[in-house]
Length: 208
Image (tube, rainbow, N blue to C red; front, side, top):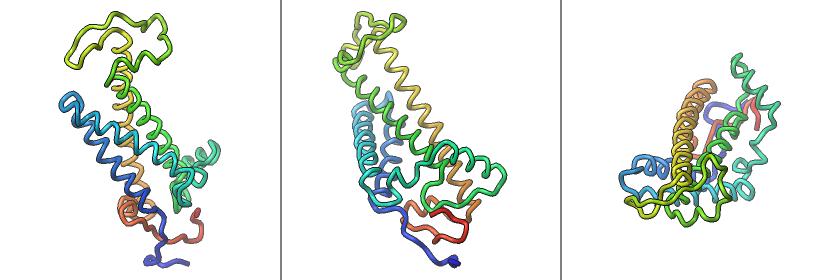
C-alpha cells in the first residue's frame, strides 16, 4: 500500500500551463467585457487558441491528458454520482467521471462563447451563417460605437454570447465546488496537484 508521501506524476506541464492560462484568459475576458473591448477580444482569441490546443492534446497528449483515458459512458458517470451521494465513490488518479463531464461542458461552452464573440467582432462574418428563422430574421443594420452592427441577427448573437459567458461562469463555480469537495473527500489538494503535476500514488480501491 502506498504511503502518504508516495506520489505519481499525473498532469504534464502542457496540461498545467493550459489550465492556468485558460483561467487567466477567461478572467480577463470577463472583467473587460464592455469596458476594454480590444483587450476583451485578445483574451477571447487566446481562449480559442487554448481550446484548440486542448482538443489536440486530448488526442495526442500524455496518458492522463487524453480524452480516451478519462471520458466514461453515461452509465459509469451515473453510477459514480450515485456512489458520491452515498459517500462511497472511488478515488480516480486522473479525472473522475463527473470531472470529465465538466471538462467537456466547459470546452463546449467556451467554444460557443469564443465563436459568437468572433462573429460579433466583425458583423461581415455573419454573412457566412445560414439564414436565421423568421423569428430572428435579419433587419437593417444600424450604426453603433463598433461600426455597422444591429438588427435582430446581431442582437440574437450578442444575447447568445452573453448566455454562453454566464453559463461558463456557472460551470466555473460548480467546478470549484467539485474540486473542493473531492479534495476533502480524498484528502488531497487537487488545486495544488494542477500546479505540481503530482498526486498521491494509487492505493487499493483507486481507479488508475
